Image 1 (cartoon, rainbow, N blue to C red):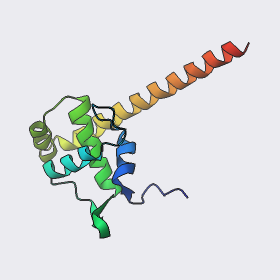
Image 2 (cartoon, one colour):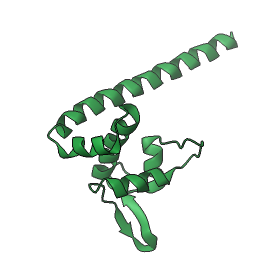
Image 3 (tube, rainbow, N blue to C red):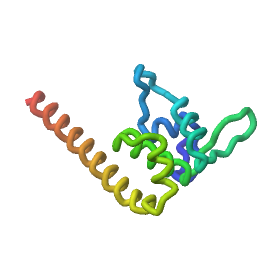
Image 4 (tube, rainbow, N blue to C red):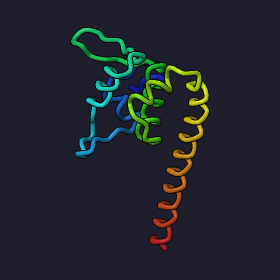
Length: 123
């Protein structure tokens, strides 16, 4: 059963959506999301029984912005806080969308290239 795109996501699903990896190669670094929750008060997941976190689309989009600024742009946590609290936050959406589109396009090109190489081997 697949969740709809606007359904709440678990912390593990959010890690996969953001494609987060730890420096040690750990495949599911949920600690990164928890750290960001402590640092950025704008992130407000729903916490239900058993202290399980669930994230809506708004929170996931905010986490994408934070990841983009920290990981892709190399900003500090303090710098990201200032950016999110400033009027530049709206301009960030456009920049983030362009970056994500470019990344998706690069992945598609790499996949097509791999398929072409595999087809050449079949000949």
